[in-house]
Length: 424
Image (tube, rainbow, N blue to C red):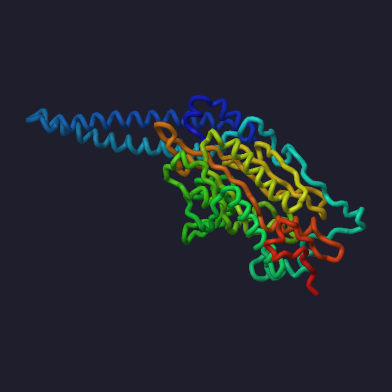
C-alpha cells in the first residue's frame, strides 16, 4: 500500500496518481477524512486510558468516601474506555480498508491512458518475410498437431476449455525452456526456487491480487487457499514479516511454478490453441532491493528479459504501459510483445513491474537502513511464460515441411537437435 505519510503531506501527488490510473480522485478526500477520524479516535482512547491508569493509582492510595467516589468513576470510565477502544479499532480498520484499495503511486513519465495507450520504446529483430519465401505460415496449433506436441481436444475433454496437453516434442520443448530460463537466471545472480502454488489469503492480499484482480483468481473455500496466478505471489511473501539485512540486498529469486488464471472477461478471445489458457508454467524473476535502487533494478530486469527473447531469435517490441494498465501494485510496467506471424501483430510474452515499497509495506518486509528500519522495494519480471514462448518459437521458426527450427541457444537443452520434426 502507499505510504500514509505521503497521503498526509502531499495528497495532490496521490490525486495525480489516481488521474494517471484513470481512477477517482475522491478516494483521496475519503482517506483524509478517515485518517482524521482515526487520529481523533486514537487520541480519545489514549486520553481515557491515561486517566484510567491514573485513577488506578489514586484508588490504591485513597480511603473512605474518596475511595468510594474513585471506584464509581473507575467503573464509569471502564465503560467509556471500552467504547473508545471499539471506536478506535473501527476507525483504524476503515482507514486501512480504504488505503488498501488505492493503487501504487504511478512513476513520473508513465504514459497516460488505458490499455491501448502504451508507448513503444523499441523494436528488436525483423519479422520473417513469409510472402517473400513463398510460404503461408501455419498457426501454432496446426504446427503443434503436426509435431504431436499440443493436444487441446483431450485437454478440453479432461479439464474443459482453455486446457491442453503438451506431449512428446511439446513437453520436451517446455522442459528445455525451463532449463534454459533457469540457467540464464542463475548466471544473472538469481537463486532458483520452486515455490508453493497454493497460498494463504495474506499472500494474495499482500501482493495486491485480491483487489482489482480478484475475479481472475481461483479460490479453494474449504481450505481458504488460493491458486497463484504467478510465482510473484509466493516469492513476494517469502520474506513477509521479516527484517532483512540491507547489506545483503538485492535478493534475487527465480521461481518456477504453475500459474492459474480464470481469464475472466476473455470470453471469445484467443480461443484457438494455447495463447490464453487457465493454466501454464512460468519462470518468474523477483527482487527485494533498496528503494533507491529500484528504478535501476527495473531496467536490469527488462534487459534480462530482452536478452532471453533475443536468444530465442523472436522479433519483439518493448512497451511502456500506460497508467490505466498497471494493475494495483505497479508504479511502472514494461511489457515485451513477440511477433506472431499468423496474426500479423505483436502479442504480449513478458512483463516486468517496479512495485516500489507497495507490496513490502503490505507484507511487512523491512530492512535496516542506517539507524532504523523501512520497507524494501519489490520488483518482478517474467523470464519465460511457457505456452506463449512455445507459440512464438513454433510460428517464427517454422519451415515449409512442417518442421520447426530450434534456436541455437536452446539446442543444448534438447540434446543438440536442430529441428522439431512432424510425426507421421
